[in-house]
Amino acid sequence: MYYYCPTALSRPREHANPDGFVEESHSLPPREKKSLPVVLSIAGYDPTSGAGVTADIKTIAAHGCYAITCITALTVQSTRGVKRVEMVDSRIITETLEELITDFKVAAVRIGMLGSAEAVRTVAAFLRRNQPENVVLDPILKSSSGADLIFREGAQAIKDKLLPLVDVITPNIDEAAALTGLPVHNVEEMQVAAAQLHRLGARNVIVTGGHLDPPVDLLSRTSGHEVKLYKGERVTGSSTHGTGCAFSAAVACNLAHDESLADATRDAKQYVFNALKNAIALGKGKGPINHLYRK
Image (tube, rainbow, N blue to C red):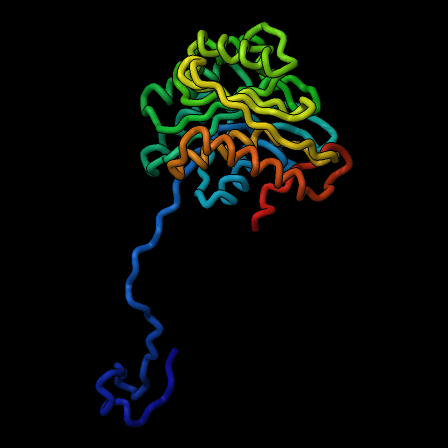
């Protein structure tokens, strides 16, 4: 900004240009800027933004982190369900992940829909090469509308290739049952399934029981020797799409903020509860939760 000042040359604290105009300075003393933890989302694309990478971006922003993403699959879907899934070439996934990891210091990783055994192996290879911290796996097998989002060999690859490489796995009761081959309908069976997941290589397991009455999540640490329950309240409504994605992304963000796993789980559960409670009806089917209620 410039203003005319005939006496500018006689005012030592201002800097005049040759035309007699003084530049007004609005600069402030330098201060240290707080950096944002970077959270990498590896997941599918949901055009409704209720789940997948675009939902993760909202969750990550709501937690004061910065989101970077790698899309593993494209879907044709609305709030009424999934119509089609198209996988992203594994070479694109590899190139994207390697480009991002060499550019950003990643504080946490959230892995969601992978879709195929090839994508699972690709992401597993990336984790082995780069060994990022705070890797949270949400083993998505079906959409909330019931559509299959990974082939059977992909689910097996998750058990064989990914479980030993991640820090936390966050299956819901149906996913825990599918991965272990065990019935999971109550807290006792959740604990048995968690123990089996430990035997398959999982370090820490959070089995989410949002569909139980009352809702309860189970955290099992250090091969099942430490178990903690997180009880909740049921929220009625049709805007429930994306709760699992939001929970796992919130856990990753909380870990990126250096929370303990127990606190990260508690705070993620509270975040999803509030996002459900503050959801606004959108679409003609199962609408999204309100990821940005904090804003």
